[in-house]
Length: 387
Image (cartoon, rainbow, N blue to C red):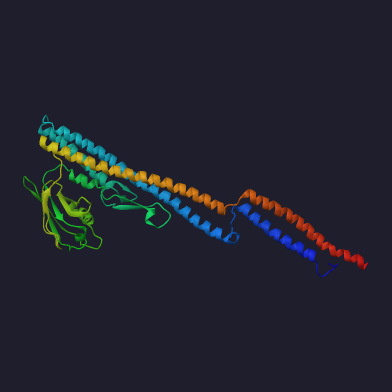
């Protein structure tokens, strides 16, 4: 190649190489300063897409672990309240065993009944007041609570906790120290959603004379209404609740079969017919506890022990849910750890490897700058020919 002035190929070559080195140096500086191997899609288009998917999954699972912990908190709140329910029932059982002894006179049995009444009232208060973030847990209204414990929208990411059988309010009603009969209105959830509202009169007749009545309008059947919602509407009615209480009757499968109405004074309850295909209430035995005699107290022992067994089963179910949530959290945390490691392999800068590249680029930059200066000085030799 001859000596030329207009075109300095050596300088152009040195400049091109220096520009490439400068780009590599800038890229290394960006990766070393940010800690990320991928700072823009151009760095690794496929890797960026995979990394973003992993980050979405990691974020979802992290929140899912917190959701599962909330599930444990809900279950612990309900189970903690049932612990005290157990204590109350154990005391009622002690009182029943005490009352079954004929060394007690009528006054002593009355004192036992007085304490039992207070304890049963406390059961009702626990059932109505136990809630988590505004959701009542022990009055049967919670139904099934769903907890999102996964990062996707499939059923595998959901744990459903059935709280519908946790009804301490109904338990308190069935253990009320009283005598008499209630009235059961045969009603299914389907009927509750379709019957026509009308005025219904509830009457409580005491064995020794005297009646209590309440004429109320049954709530109009609407789509989505259930026997539980009808009972709740009646109990919220001040006229009705002044003398009566309503609860749901269920079969062995948990399906609603009727509306049970009892008088607070223990009298026998009758009802007029409910319009819309639902008949008048039929008398049923009021499931109560009675300390008035040896025989009654023995029957009460059986009733209370059955209640204790019922609560024990419910607490066992809640304990099983809690253990399940604990294992779920452990599994989710392991998944988060592994996914984070996978994302790190794609997204994070290998500082040692990148430092090697950076050092190489630095040296090449210095060499390229020096060679560009040399190439630019080469045409100066032409001046000697012109001198």
